[in-house]
Length: 394
Length: 92
Image 1 (tube, each protein chain N blue to C red):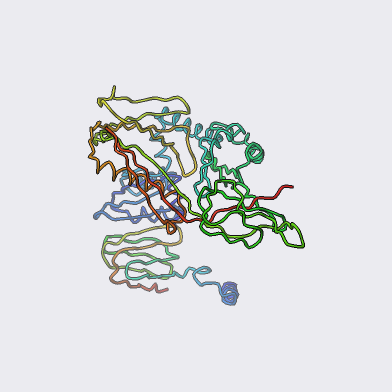
Image 2: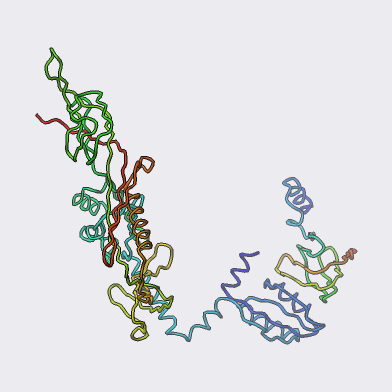
């Protein structure tokens, strides 16, 4: 039944009102001729409303005349009438056609390059290399040979473990996995020394294989040999081994900072101006409101690409510029305030550096007051395992 | 003679009766809808009363808000609040 309705909608139908005393006769004649009628409703004694196919209307008029009924059209429905309505609007149709054509045309290009790095580790200058390899914004999709681009980029760089390019709509998704630097693994069979990789004072040394080169309490600097990769026996002479052992050392992390008592600080007032602009490829149109009325302000620019569907980007983007007003506030710290502020800042930075915070043994803070500033030195003393393998070169 | 043979074959093949003969098929769905197949024509149509003629007699439907939902060559669908319907058997 629904299919019939849809077909009727496509061909168009009329809702007519038939008025007369012999409506039943009229309907029977229509039925005998095989016309389809639906939604028949009696309004009052002599009036009836019904839907009829558009093609049968002329015949129905004749039948109505024969039966002495009066017909008038209540509504015209369906696709032909809808199209007829827009027939006169030629420019509208033309624009619609142009828009469809432009969309079809522009869908053949790449309008956005999305770079997804695994684990969010950023790879420097990757965008330039991709551009150089041939994947550019505005490039024809059929011209892009993903395999070749991947090969070219990977040839130029050695810090990419894996690369994949996926063309989705007008969006090119580049997936990258950064390669770690190859750690130098010294084979178990090969002879090696253990070498310090940090400056510090040895607190514990335990050579399992090889001969200890330093004693507890010795100060070592980076590159010093801690355990030699040879052993000396009374009868066997010098025998080279793969040095093994544990070395614990006190390592110091120091950082200093100078905090002036009088500083000017930026403080945002909360006043914000926003301007919008349209950017088509590299051509920018601004809708400015004139010169900014703020004296001091930060400008933040954000660009949003317009997309039709999830992956169908257009070469148009909306640029939003936000001016945030700030004031320069004169601030004076007392000695104590400057001290605590500086210490807090340094501690925060230092703690990011230190891997194992449980092994912090000592914390040393020195401050030197000057005329209009304070120097703060913070030293962390940490017990750490130091030492890396280094191959013995004969 | 010929007709009876045809009907016997049709019976054997279990073809529905309304397909091969003029017998009307009346199906009532709920109290609000009624479909009549193999009808001849409409005799009377009011909002509260419909008379439909078939080859075996006349069906009259009482109710209110009665509409003829669709009317094609072989079936008619009546919707509305049907209260009663009865048959007038044709005597021949």
